Length: 232
Length: 86
Image (cartoon, rainbow over all chains, first blue to last red):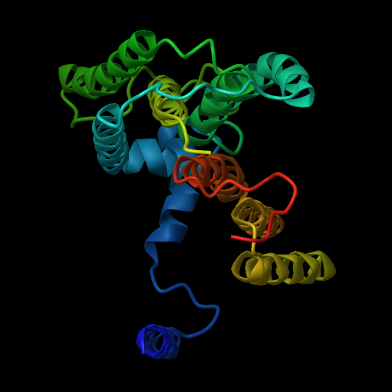
């Protein structure tokens, strides 16, 4: 009885999905861009923002306010998870240390992951990637040693400090462009030469702030889940 | 390139089916990560390296770890001998 209801619900959901996708693909001619704004941005972005990576130009130059909202959503989600987990009776179980392979790999991987994350964050305006991807890699760099030896926990106050500082820096950079008489989060500091490390004005600074914020947030969140411990 | 995409799609579908049918929760989590990894390869082949990086770092890496931790937290971690039986 129970199983039938579940199957019926799944089938109904699947049918609805098929109808929705069918309607969507009927309305869109295949291979034709539904909006013309993309071509315009692609042709104008490198000259206007000085960022060689057009995705970064859109994410921080043209849609910086959306990115601020994105960062805020991540912050709220991490805060909510932290609130729920902090009340769950932390550290009542002995933590088994990781095996030899995990320990050796954690020691070996840590410097490389930190360098890779920093590279992806700092070159966000030149090469693919940026604050979000690099931040996730940074979080992994600080999280893997935690898996290998759970007895040395992550310093949560430092992570919270970095996170708060980075979040404030993003908004301060956004406010700073008001001093030049521009709108909130308008890129400033000059464009520089296309393709240089120090180019694209304030976009690399914004991505650095995002990278630090995302990295410390995710590392803190996962460390908290580990600290709460498991039942097995 | 077309063959690489087809290979990645086949790997993706196989891993997705494995996710549903594997009895061990930990193995299912690993299969979900494989789905994301194959999707990242497809994104890279379609010249969307930004999306591929995000998919590999977040979906294949972090959410895999998050799911594995959740499996452990809920006491469903059966990585020792005799896995597959609940």
